[in-house]
Length: 239
Image 1 (cartoon, rainbow, N blue to C red):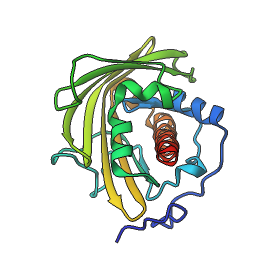
Image 2 (image 1 turned 90 degrees about the vertical axis):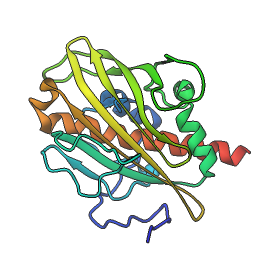
Image 3 (image 1 turned 45 degrees about the vertical axis):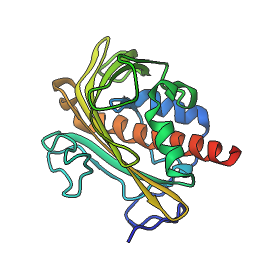
Image 4 (image 1 turned 180 degrees about the vertical axis):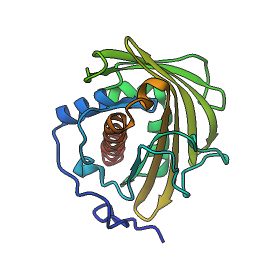
């Protein structure tokens, strides 16, 4: 049974969250860059923002992939990736609101400060094969300079109101993620939507120091969920 209470976690091992200001959240996201490859980014190992109401988090910098990895159309993250992270949150808003906000990629900069630019590379509704290019800043680390990551994402699988999976590289000056694979699941539950996301990164540069890289990946995804939650709930409230 899925726990739909946004203030409770079904996993007692989930770390306690710590509240952060919007500016701090933006710094974490930028660091992450990560975002899914999107890019998500993140220096500084930190817990998820309190308002993200995340549950069942798992962060791994080894080869073992959780047996319950998320999928879309039967496909998930790279099972051999040294770096992968999974998290989730409850959003008190209609499924259509959450889905439309998330899949309108051109609108990301309006509710995600770390996304500094976004461009669709093909017309029409988001579908399998759709491509989009976006940018996000990445801070300096002990081994890489501050840079702007350019992420080119390709939708590999998509099921309306259910899931989406995209892949692609993130490239900046002195920093490269060869391939990021990002999976999102959207589950309608009592009172709103349970959003689950999982991402893997591969590439010689980031795999050379996986313990450090995971510190960027995890907070970035947590912050992305927090931004999605805030935007969807605000839109739902105003309507």
